[in-house]
Length: 448
Image 1 (cartoon, rainbow, N blue to C red):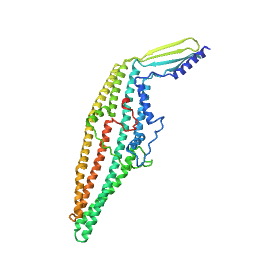
Image 2: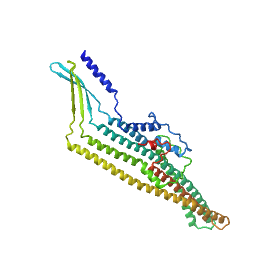
Image 3: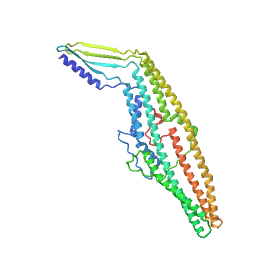
Image 4: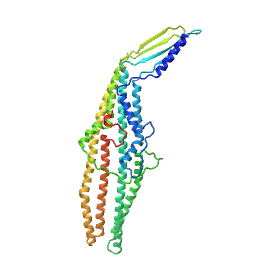
């Protein structure tokens, strides 16, 4: 009767321990709240978030939203972050208690002692390990943020490259039309003896060259469309996305000093490295806590001779001083390496920002020059040539050359606009101060 009571007691203890919960570590609740907030926007209840419908008339923001929600790289980074949040609980939890059994057998079973054993890490060890896990989780969030911003940038680059191709094809077709008109005029003059054969051959060579250029541009549409499809997170087996009927240009201006300050304040790669430094600093605390002994305790009950109990206790002896010193030195070296990587990244960011800002300013200057001076002058010159041609004072070749000059400048303006938008997207990627609308990210006030 007594033995069955003891067995029931241990069974009840096992059931009780099965429902135990540990104490939250500092930062754990915030990490879970942040994870839940992003999950509601990005992967509510784990099914994929409905993607916005895309048509040829969809805005750039719709294409960006589609890319953010459908990107496999963003999804992988999201689940890496989710896993790191769960690891905080794992790191701060006590080891599982153990059910033990001990028996003495001679000719027969003379003693049977079931028991329960606990292992307790030394004071402060679990808190220190949780500190490392919290910092690593923050770094994983910023990796997720960086993946989202990179996906938005990739989409914008593909979007503007495709838009530029359409502009190039349009202006090259206009140029081909002019060259063909000139070639027909020269041929007619050659037949009437007013133009040399060399002039006709030169005009035909320009026509053939332009036809080849146009064919190459048309052929380049396939890789650009494939890149656009990939930026939307679509696999080759999925249907092709609709090609935008029009391409939006922002035309915004930037404040260089303010953008640089924002870059150092919000760049996710820097934030991830700062989190790595915090993780390394927490790792130093973990290394020094290894000098603290771990403890264990157990209690066994004799089934055959109750109520007879066997309490036991023990602790580890951290006697290997060279090992403890090596662990502390390794943690210190990891911390110094993390700090050095952060400084290196800050330097690289400043250089990269300066380069992208120069590209933006250069393309903006070129665009202003073309729009404000060169194009008006070329159009004015074309008007004068057209008037002279109608009056019989200009030949057809001068007319086509003037028209070609206008088309070339319009093409250069289109290329400058596309380059400006890509440079702006690149700067936005560096700064990360204003994520795209609908991005599944935390607000600035709630970021880790």
